[in-house]
Image (cartoon, rainbow, N blue to C red; front, side):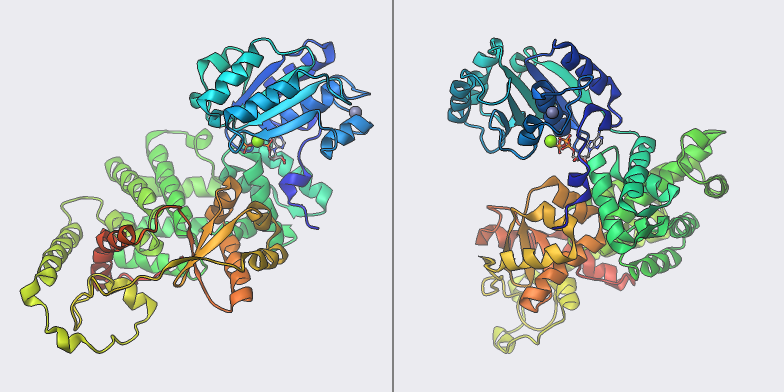
Length: 543
Ligand SMILES: Nc1ncnc2c1ncn2[C@@H]1O[C@H](COP(=O)(O)OP(=O)(O)OP(=O)(O)O)[C@@H](O)[C@H]1O
Ligand SMILES: [Mg+2]
Ligand SMILES: [Zn+2]
């Protein structure tokens, strides 16, 4: 079976852990000298090596032939720990075993001598999720752990860990890994895997992964499914990114106050199925670069760009006042927040671009948008007034079926014949989707990385939406970084159902009927949508 790269390349000894030398060197020395601690606390952002180091410690202290503090990975103990057959080493997900009884049980067991290994090692992942009772139970044994027991607590949210726990553990902070270090690791792995990866593609993946090695490897996996020769173009495509030229063109148009031109550029990008959240992020970064370029004389160290792009940035920055650029950053960051919440990503992004074109509030366009918004609000109030409703009898015939786009544009704003059928309008119900296992089977063939991230998921349908219940970080990061991942999931669903579903997240408790209606009706975006289409902004229902 296909094994995701990040699983396959989990470091097996301290020397294989990159970018955390301050930690691995200390741990190696402690293990080699036998003066290791009986309670460790690992903290730091996701995918930076916490679980990997925990497992290495568990093996190193128990290994029959340790070398220099590293485990040999070959003796029966190392192998038994790796394949989970030696029960003296336990990896416990504190998020799902967070009760006081779980910890009491663990404590009772811990006082017994280990059966095969020298040390019992308890790895408590997500330890900030323990209930207060469980923490108390844990404190008792952390105060004076038996000689044969080692606790390794790991968390991404150190601020949620009680000081009483912190004070009993030796703490290590895992850092985000530098882009250069991640890139080198990717290049090494590609060499071993027989994949070709260009230097700048490696750096681009590293930058996108933002310090997390797991995310970097997942993205690499995705790129490899596109092509065995991974270039910047491959990464751009796999991650749904816009190329530099597009960013320059959009910024050029925006800074020159040409909304039509800016929208044309966005349109060209949408043909390449770009991810609009990503695009917005990239544009923020582009504006940030402009800000730095117009502030700093020699910005080479502060801006990651090729020398040619740097020159272009400096030229573009010369043409606009700094204030305008900073206003643009503000505006785009607001849009980023909204983009993460709306299903109408393209529209949201286009609205941001139009605002960007007139980042000066007194401009005519801004005024026009404000006027349109106001007109819309007034119109909505009138449409709801009972005396102005058309005769209900007239409205009796079923409405003609509308395309999804039109429906989205006018969902609550439709001034077409017929009263807004508020009471009668039934929204599709949320129902468990029974054939999800088949979908996952299909997905496995299409995208190993995404499949790996979704094994424990389930799904619900609601009309044309497929609501996926999957909380994994990997899942979210794949869907965020990659249009292709989303496509492969849609394809898998299509293969099973023969229907095109739109994807959405399933949030338990969100779909009570009343709540649902309110949500549908009070979405302010719906109103703007219609007006946006009057402004010539294409309206599209995506995801
Ligand atoms: N420092 C590192 N050096 C080499 N590979 C790494 C490093 N950190 C993470 N990885 C890669 O990412 C994968 C996941 O790492 P790991 O499980 O150790 O992360 P974590 O810090 O425990 O993350 P989380 O907070 O999500 O549990 C590993 O299997 C490995 O492939
Ligand atoms: Mg972990
Ligand atoms: Zn060994």
